[in-house]
Image (cartoon, rainbow over all chains, first blue to last red; front, side):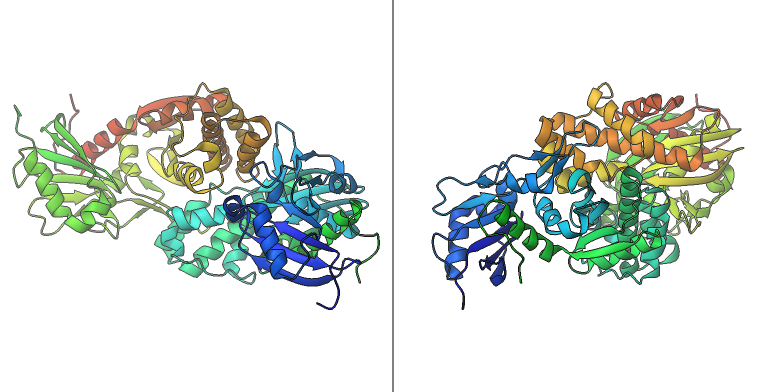
Length: 313
Length: 313
């Protein structure tokens, strides 16, 4: 390392841990990923895991750290109580909670809670990604879509998070493909799905029309029996059905905006969501999810006086 | 046994086998249940399993048998090719397929196929239940709802099956409760759900309003985190959500009829579906599913000349 780091930025998910070392301007000096997420850290100890990672990266034992994600859950390191929506991005970051006795200055960004009895919801980690795309959603009226195991859709107005919803699309794909009768259709290892697949598109189109999942799931099995739908196409059908239904449902709840939907995503999933939205005539702007969480952690460090104000170079 | 049986009636499901011995009028002389369903019979041999059951019941080695269910699947005893809908109940029963070399006269009732590319579907076993409730759906316009692992909804017009759909509601409950994040909410052994539960009713009402499952699943988890929803109530919420969404979706597809929906069901599930339909102001007539399949097998035996025409006493 040619420069001494000023702070560590840490994204602590359920199964993954990512650590960046940043200089005084918020630029990345070093980075690493591990599978020591919440589930591992609960056993090894959060301080032990973070100390070891930072030591391996050659960082000082008193280097401060800004953390987001499941480390702030009740069953995490120290609970960072949910901030209720609506709330401004600045107020969310400002509510970061210090970890007592960590041996270094550690602050954990809180998650968000939506205490609406008709749509109770929570997030941890995505709020930091949202802070990281403040340049896209910080003024005006926007929808952000953050696809994944538990996809989040977020409504932002004038720099505040007004409301959000969770669609467990990735998890449904996984449990239905592995544990339901559809495992006979899809096989042991679901095929990678292409956004150019006509089967993906057709099942997506149908689901976009009404958001109905339950009426169509068994149709994947029946198509195998009646017309020989193969394993690759069965995976594409399930993916199209679930993503199409998610988009239909989210648009029904939040309505359409003038501005493009900001699709915050990394990897192959982005192309599937972009295609689903294209089929529904929804314009999108794509933001990289990894970049977003890092930018959000930098913003959180600045908001909490751990980094000087400025722009990363 | 005081009377010599005339025929055996056999309901051969995926995991269960039921056998009745009937007299010449179709009345039950003896009955037994076993877990030698399709999955077991594929290993032991279908003829071996049936011969043993009938021998244990003291029946003659040449007693004829009328069979419905998965024994007629491609991976079953002998394939009884699907009859395409629309089709009359009489034509469906008349298409029973003889099993060559069984050592006795065995006929298998075929399942139904709906070869609509927008709604491909199949059933095996339920068609026999439908024949068993011909007294309720044999004339006029009717909807039947057959709840279960893979719930079927069936539209009947003038004694013919016009169309049907499958909602894998029981299977979704099971895989989501066991394998998704909701297992933390529901616990290892899902609580029995009561139709009087206000939580069941509230989640059911919400799902009835639009049929949306994906938007609400994670709300069960969030309700646990935000307002302490307990395990019993989490199971009730998931049940209400999935059953309400099924009813909303089926009614959207098939429309409402003047006649009550015929709910073909056995056991506790019937009360949950009846409550869901009451909340949606849908009148129901309940028919016992076990009685229906037996009556359907008697009708199939008569239609194929294995029993004299007449009415069971």
